[in-house]
Amino acid sequence: MNTTPSNAAPAGGTTTGTTPPGHAPAPTVDVHAHVILPRVEQVVAGHPGLREHRALDARRNGPESLAVSGRMIGERVARLTRVPDRLADMDTAGVDVQVVSPSPSHYHYWADEELAERVCLLAGQGTAEHCAQAPDRLYGLGLVPLQHPSLMVGLLEHALGLGLKGVQISSHAPGSSHAPGSSHAPGSSHTPGRELSDPAYEPFWARAAELGAVVFLHPFGCTLDERLDRFYLSNIVGQPVENAVALSHLIFSGVLDRHPGLKVVAAHGGGYLPTHLGRADHGWRVRPEARGCADPPSTYLRRLWFDSLVHEPAALRALVDVAGPSRVLLGSDHPFDMGVEDPLDRLRAAGFEPDTFDAIRGRNAAALFDLDDTRPKEQSRA
Image (cartoon, rainbow, N blue to C red; front, side, top):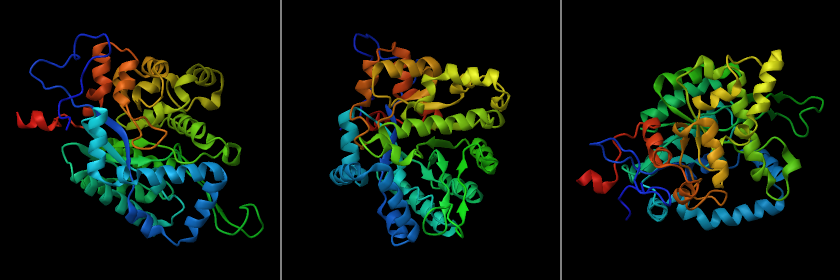
């Protein structure tokens, strides 16, 4: 087992970073990894809302991508559910610690209040039990139901009470129809969706900031729907679009001004937003309705955190450029096929100087998730 911190400097480097004298090096921490929880799927099985959700998912992804994804998940079930398989993958990748979140397929934002509460309770309990099998190497996140803002604070507190480090959310709460057919059909009713700028989420943001809980923003599904139903565009394009929209709602609405202590981590490097900050800042300057935040939108990237899952060295360097080296965390999306098997090697390939490399490798995550006492087993025994 790999129990030595994976803190080698980038290729060509001669040091291992700038760990303060008298301190053990921070562990290598992967903040983006998932677990599948069968009990969650058992509790939603047979509900009409699940059938409608799966029908929408089928339209959005298309039959070819659904088939490929089904095979991919089937091949990786053990890595998504069994701790020994997870630890073996971590050892191979040189990862000491993972922050494990439920698969986004467990959101089930179509569920009513009673069912949604059960889903989130089971997700938190299941993730905590999974992580408890390797407590020095696995930390977890729970779920809260974006479709029911009144439940979110209580379920956040429940997750933290289980020892989890925070919760994972999607990019928005989708609307729902309450009659067959189109939501615009006569006699049908429709519950509108909510964006992350919705005032109903204010108590949740306030409590998360007060408690120091991490909120991991990980989209699932894109509202561009059938426009992305070929070539796996639903994920390849859809995920970064949803990241950009969700983060823009948080920034432009002033959520980050009102809750400066909020710890939001954006998956997939924040999607497309970090690449078009000039347009965001220009709109903020010239459009009065875009002035919901106190400062230019680009400045808020240094108040957020981002995983490193951007797939190429140049993109990672650009992300660090705009967000700052203290705001980027190692992330792999383990073990899905749109993730990477070698996040540490990808980080080395970006060619950062040793202090930046060490910060992204694990020091930033250790501070953000309060893992300062976490040490690889070999060090713990020393």
